[in-house]
Length: 487
Ligand SMILES: *[C@@H]1O[C@H](CO)[C@@H](O)[C@H](O)[C@H]1NC(C)=O
Image (cartoon, rainbow, N blue to C red; front, side, top):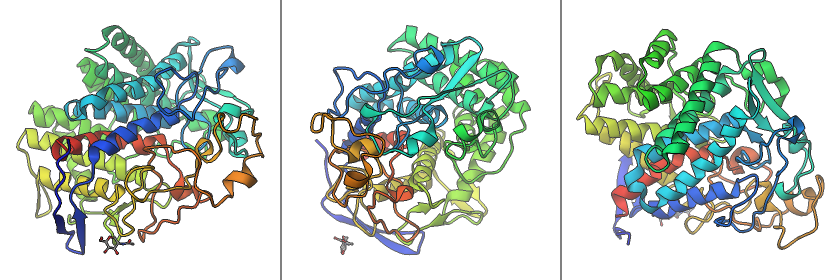
């Protein structure tokens, strides 16, 4: 039973605004819901254990365009496309969360593993179905985005996309390798056979990423751009993939490789596109916990990143809204908030385990400095904000009702058995002012604007669309705070 403090806690944040929080949010409830969300995004044949009941089987013949079985995996966001680049990033972040926060996750750990496995079963097929090819997505995004239909009715062209030696994609391959390697650690004790399969596939995919260099955007063009163009290039995914392979194998080859990359770009972001900061935090674990000085350069780079994020740091390049939300970019800003909060909280964990502190100029940074900023961001998402509104569907008293999500905004098959075609969903449902009929419980939307305002408008996808990678990075911090505050 969660012990909830009744007293209001008020504190100054960044010495600019006063923030009042009435007790702590119910992180455990939010954790449960954040994982339930992934069931709403499932593609393929749903198992009997499916809890989100308004969804049904869909896209069972994905892959048939290439005579392979690529059913399964996740729909990316409010659409019905399977984009492997962000899907793999989501999987890596879910896995990292399950590794770092396995204990506070408690009974939700089984649901976290199920969420990871739904992605890795699909990613394994993508990596092994055809020798010499890595499949990287299913569904023509341009055709899909012209329709407003349920995944269960989908009749758009399910084009299959792949990379190969002659059409490389070191970015998508590096991220896929990272996801498989991270997941292999999650399953190491509970399913050693599956774990070995994940790791041996991860090694092969990483070798392909390293040997055949190139950006998948150059190979696939309008099939992935502007949707998930690899804007930051592929060096960050080579670093990230090698870092996860190193953690999973302890093979020095990966360390030599990542040192030789010269991936020293300074950064103040972390996302499905840019993973430099994530790799540095992951590598810092060895500098801090094992005191291995050969990783010290990555520790310094991780701390440079933290100094660009912290509001009271002299080198901060991060904006905060008047209500205290980290503000990076106007479209789907909460994805940056959840991803960066994961890094803040996880670096704080490593610092705390090693009694480490550092400085941003003359400002001393303790593990509690990073952790309280991460907590403040998570609390904001869960309702500690000027609108007193939770940005997670079905969490708290007030939350988004008109999210930009096809399945959630259209009646379920049970309610409306007749098919709703490509154009059939727009007038009656997409443009309707009514709340969505199906609760995509746990979905976190793109979130408020730079003035903490939110209009709850289905057509405003920059703010009202959920995405797998927003939730993927939030699960770890929610588990961490549930363990500390909802015992
Ligand atoms: C939010 O809650 C606070 C404290 O209960 C209240 O003073 C404020 O008016 C509320 N704001 C809105 C927009 O509902």
